[in-house]
Image 1 (cartoon, one colour):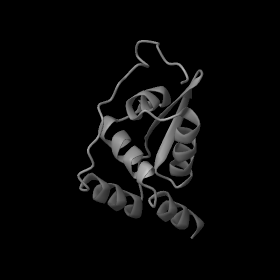
Image 2: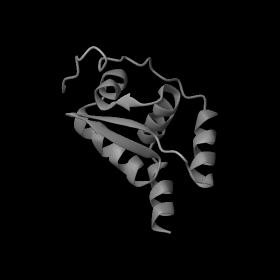
Image 3: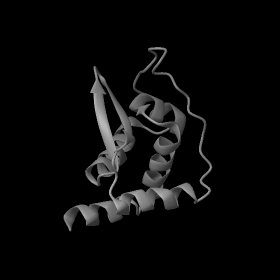
Image 4: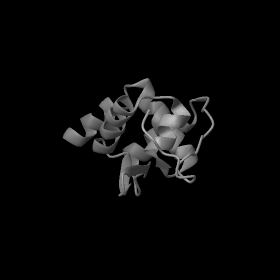
Length: 108
């Protein structure tokens, strides 16, 4: 039951719903690209990503200094249906401003 409650809690924040939708739409994303695209400070972003990861929505892969986030697969039915609902919310997503490929990652 604990993971279910964490999942429900994770979805109760507008920023986390936006993050899930953004990552779902863009695939694997470096934390520096998330910072740059969503104009969020690193500490706030990291806190939200940690909550989504602990709730079972995200998977993280570390490569050197940077962390890359993607939607966890496979998702259980609850998380899959929640993600499907988020896709239909009509959230206007900012453009992915990818700086990681150019090696330009840096903390704001």
